[in-house]
Image (cartoon, rainbow, N blue to C red; front, side):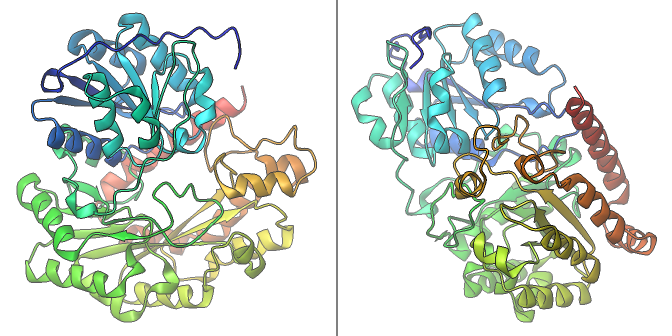
Length: 494
């Protein structure tokens, strides 16, 4: 511990939860206003869990990605609403922004308890030792842990009980207790639905979102399961390696609530792996059809291509699906084994061909720059999309984020451990330089540009534009993405 660090933590004053105010904040990334801003589902689940356990508690959402004056917006809410607890949802790479935002809060109101949860503190808790204005962190699933934190702030629970429940507190000497992972919630059915009342659904439906295209006018993500039994080395495994599935009845109840109470006409499924149980997929689709919900369905991720057959794809379309994303990652069988995805590429290609044949928008995800990847393997991967009936595709640079097995593998397979850019200052998969380029001299950006040039022929662009719904919205979002790319490139050159 750096002896110069001075703690700002204060002994908590007991606050009755019935009168407590909790501000839930999604930080911005410095790529600018064009960056994707899908609804922060984790924060909505925290809010509904707090309200279920503590009747009378007040919650509010501040998504700084949607704010023009980001720091000013936070300061305004702190001054006007005077929250007792501020909780940040943080991703790897948020360190500098969290430092800035938490310091701003403490300057206005030192008594406010500042907490951080999400993938960043879950997998890199030691990074928070130097974030002296952060009073606590939550590791793992946060719904129960944030309630335990509120119990502590209200004087109903002692500090000694928190580390085993996933909550680490900053001590009076400035050190931060590094807690265990919070226990996973075994029964997702017992969790309340997300607190959609915190959202301006129309605003999010106009913003750039992860799916790039929209079939409906008002969309909302849903999560029907947590956890994944596969062991891909680039995954943070936030929700564990066992798939916990909500029942078809529970899932469709949520969809029906969104349709009838919130006028949502599209859902995007954000699971780790939605189709792990084929019978459950078919049952969900049958219930949607039987209830005549008339909902559009898209999969920005959530699908494993080699676990789909024609019957499942057809049933998904009958239930309202219009877009499926297939994450192939690499065309190299050697790398498929090394990254432990072990995807059956031929089965996935068969699924893509059938989905395309029945009119679905098919999207592919690919990655280049894995440790030990050869230039020939890169070329094989960038050629594959060109030969598939994909409507569109995205190619990403491999980033070995801290907290993943990929990070350790990248260190193991390289020699210059001290100088590798293993943790990007800006954690973007579109980074112009990565550890791979630094180590090999091979420009991933060059190959990404070649791949897009090969794929997006004038005929394919025309077919894509004809196929996609809501074309005017799509064009507006493309302009935002181009603006994001310009800002990112401008920051790269600084």
